[in-house]
Amino acid sequence: MSSSSSALTGLQQLLADKSRVVVLDGGFATELEKDPRVDLSASSLWSASLLLEKNAHLQSVVVDAHKTYFLAGADVATTASYQASVDGFKREGVTAIEDVEKLFAKSIDLGVQARDAAWSELDQTKRIKPLVGASIGCYGAALADGSEYRGDYGMTKEELVAWHKHRFAYFTNYAPADFLICETIPCLVEVEAFVDLLNEFPTAHAIVAVACRNGTELNSGEPIARMTEVLSKLKNPSQLLAIGINCTPPQHVESLLRKLDAAAWPKAVYPNSGEGWDGVNKKWLPADSTGGPSSWEEFLPKWYDAGARIFGGCCRTSPDDIRAIREFFERRQ
Image 1 (cartoon, rainbow, N blue to C red):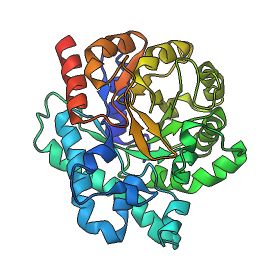
Image 2: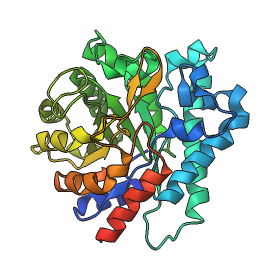
Image 3: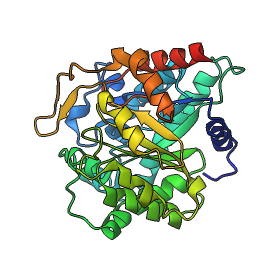
C-alpha cells in the first residue's frame, strides 16, 4: 500500500470534494451468519475464524458477503480481519508467523476477489472503483471479553504500539490493501498508539474510528473532543483519511460529530443498528427506541450537515441499510 495507489488517490480526490460522499459497508458477521453453515460464536476470532485453513470451504461466503455489499452500494469492503491477531491465531493453533501472515493476506485477497467480481457487474460510469480497507480491530477485540465496550485495558501507549505493530506493518506493506481501517477504538491511549504507528510507517493511510458510549465520550469515558489534540501529533496529516465514529448508537452520532468541529479531517460515521451488545452473555439487547437503521432518512442529513462525508453501518446493519444510504445521497445529487 502506498500513496501511489490509484484507488487510494481516487478516494483522496473524492474526499477533497466536500460535496461528494463515500459509502462503507455494513455489519459483516450478521451477513455471514445468514449462511446456515456459519456459526461465528464457536470461536473468539468471530469473522476472522473463516480465514483459517480448516474453514476454507466457507471462504466463498466471505466473498459473497463482500460482493453483496458492493452491489448494494458500498465503495469500500472492510476485511474479515477485525479480530485477527497473532495472539488470536495462536489460540487456534496457528503459531508460525508466516502462517499468520498468510491469514492476514487471505482477508485482503477475499475482499479483492469480491471487488473485482462486483466491479464487472456495476455501472462503472457512476461509481469509483471500490476499495478494500484492511480492518484493524482494537486491542479489546482480540480479548473477546467486551473490553472494546469499556476501554479499561490497563496498558500503556508503548505496550499497545508493540501489540499492534506486526499486523499494522503487514497490512501497510501488503499491496492489494488500499488503506487501513483502525476501528472500534474505546480509549485515547489507543488512538495515541495508532498515531505513533502512522508516524513510524509513512506510507500507511488510515481511517481511525472510535467507539462511543454517549454523545460526548468514548467508551472509556474520555471526551471525544480531545481526539483533535491527539491527532495533531501526526507528522503527516494526509496519512489520516478520516476520523471515524463506529460501533456507537446512531442517536449519539450528530452530537459526537459536533465535538470534532475543530478537526480538519473528513469524518466517517458507521454506527450500530441501535441494538446493544452484552459482551458478558454474548447476546444482542433490544434497540433503544430513539433510533435504528429505519431512521436513515432522519439521521443522514444531520450527519452530513455536521461534517460527515463517509457513511456506513456497523453491528447488525445490513446490505439493505447500505442501499438506503447510497440511494439517499444519489437522490440529493
